[in-house]
Image (cartoon, rainbow, N blue to C red):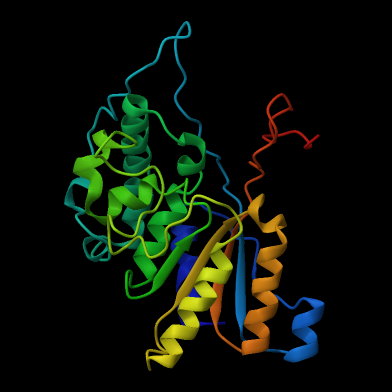
Amino acid sequence: MHASLAALLPALAALGFAPQGARRVATPAARATSVGSPARAAVRLQAENPPIGATGVNGLPVVYQGPPGGTPLLDTIESPADLKRLQPSQLKQLAAELRHETLCAVSKTGGHLGSSLGVVELTVALHYVFDTPDDALVWDVSHQVYPHKILTGRRHRMHSLRQKGGLSGFAKRSESEYDIFGAGHSTTSISAALGMAVAHNQNGAKGRNAVAVIGDGAITGGMAYEAMNNAAYLNTKIITILNDNGQVSLPTGTQSAGGVAPA
């Protein structure tokens, strides 16, 4: 197993996650081109305690004020470099504070709350283990990047989220060097990470990682499988993280995927 991926698993365990295994992925096309290739590593994640978002009262919006004890750990984080100074035992508290901060921001501006709450621990672990932005971190769709934005120097601007002249609701390359790929559409992350990995190799930076984070909805798109097959053909190392939390976006009017089988 790749060293960075091996370090990610204990970080996730410290955050209360139960990784369902890390393994190489070999599709039929991949087997035909490079059997046993180290091209791709995939991690399947499932939260032990899925986060619950804030709700309104009598149909009125609620402005969330944050935890009673404040955010002492989050207050020390200006960039992922600060995050790396924490002990693994502190990560769970940081994740709780980050979740509260995300609730505060979205309660004022609106936005993609569920998707962001669903990756709080994962976001902490990724920035704790990988050396972003040198290591490329690509979020599929990127509607889940609010915790990522808070940890990468944009916490003080979260009040402007999705406002004119404010922060984008998605990853945006012109906004931060940590937004390595601008998205807004699904199933593009693995292809993008593969392209960055190839560029790292061609530029003599083979020690850098390229990480794609993709959900259980976006992974159903054919472009994701094309990218994994292409990675094997090119024998290029990328890390793909499948956030398999069962929260697939369903068409309006169908039952939620939370706890029930999709229609």
